[in-house]
Amino acid sequence: MKFTKLSKPNQITFKTFFLTTSLFLITLLFTGCDNNKSSYTITQDTNVSKVPGLSKYVTQEEVDSFSFRYWDIDDEREYRDENKTLTTLRHYLKQKDTNKVLNFLKEHNLSVDTKFLHRLTPLMYSSFYNDLNTSKELIKLGANIRAKDRYKLSPLAYAVENNSTLTAKLLLDSGVKFDELTQIQYYLKPPFYRSMKNIIVDGDDITIIYKGKWNTDEHSKDETEPFEYIVVCNFVELARIVLESGYVPKRLEYPETIQGISEGHSRNLDIEFSVFSRLDDIPNHEQMLDLLLKYNVYGGELTKEQLKMAYDRCYKWYYDKCFIDDNMKCDVYKFYEEEFALEYNHKMFRAYCSTKNSTFKDIKEFFRYANEDVKYTNISSFFSASPKSVYIKDKNMTLEELRIHQYKNTKDEKTKKHIETYFLKNYKNINKSTNKE
Image (cartoon, rainbow, N blue to C red):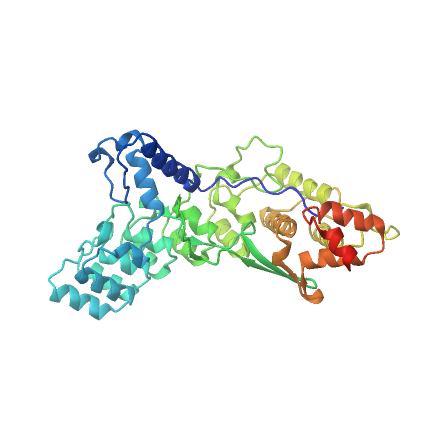
């Protein structure tokens, strides 16, 4: 029984241009050197049309895109050239000190919409930091609730990207429509099954440590569709606030495959172009699914045919004769990963598709299966690719150490050969080290 199974196709939801841009800049550098031309220094504020010759190598769109993706409102390194007055005010905004903010504006005769770096306003900062009191006072003083900075980001955009629920609700209650948001940064990194960092196996319990824990993405913060971002990050309260405001999610521009549904279709299913298609890769997806169904969000329907097809896939994938025949022994190599795979396959089979001619009764039952299936697929892939990062608690060793230990101590030659062929093929000195012992 194979442990490493087919992984989910590459995600295409968020347009990632970092590699392309880096290669472009390298090309630009070497082109300038090879032709003995003046070098170009490109910054966030570069106007391509005003730099002679630069348009041959880069467009204004590319400069603006790069600037947008690497802008971070909360990174002090962005403010090296900021004057002392604005720095003081910005720090008061970050500290959520309403009195100091209001007094500072008054004492320095500053407008409530005074412009910071890149045309940011005080309300953008207070919205980002989820400072309800300061935001209320700024709005009372006439702050522009729809102001845009040089990146076309508004106070609501900054509130949404940082999951600032209090200020997001305030802005929506003050008259801003969620439809007005055309783009936001993919600012926070949520946990995904496809972004595992470490795994701890403790008997039947599997603890996954993710690379993303809603921490700031220090690299490219790509442009993303606002409500899709909320769902992908599993910001349930923020999603509730947005839907309660009357927002109706629309068909997304980019489709996403869904494990168990997309196979065999023409890739034009409504659910693939909806936020529902993001739910199979999200830990603890249930509350978000319930909320989307409650508001009848676009794409939340599956036909009986689709549910049956998904069920049949589950049955075919996880079925083994030994699971239904008590007299049949499940025959696998006596090796940790093979036994783990057998146990997990049996668990999936019993939990979701143990009856041959049955079906999933509804979309909630389907997503319970699909989410667990994606989780298992990624655990499987992680075991295979990162054994040093998997800790087996009852063995007190990593999966890599356990592989070597079992290889060295097994007396069954077939098992030994299997381990060497499929799990230790990159360990060139394994036989030498074994012989020395």
